[in-house]
Image (tube, rainbow, N blue to C red; front, side, top):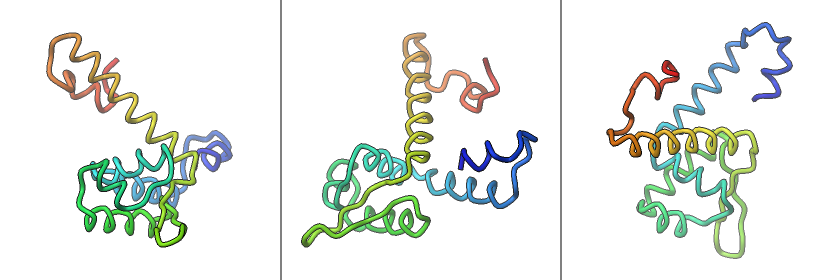
Length: 130
């Protein structure tokens, strides 16, 4: 997605279809469990049982989330013997998820050091603060 935007001539305008796809992707990642699944798969391939164990989700819930992520093209799968193994094969998606989580995790640490709740400044979490 970043390559498409960079090639848009620098006008700052995005085609509506790019905005729709980005919004749909962020919508899918708005589920904490789906975000956790993508985070785990960014670290390496895993099957449903492993994902359920590591995320604390049920097998059924993980399977349903994986189906949605796969339908949207965010997750791929391959058969490995009797197991279905899932992976994220989009470096751009991995970079966005890692950046977002790292940024929020850094804010949480800063807020905890300051002795306040998280997020201390809701505007900052939306990018409105400095």
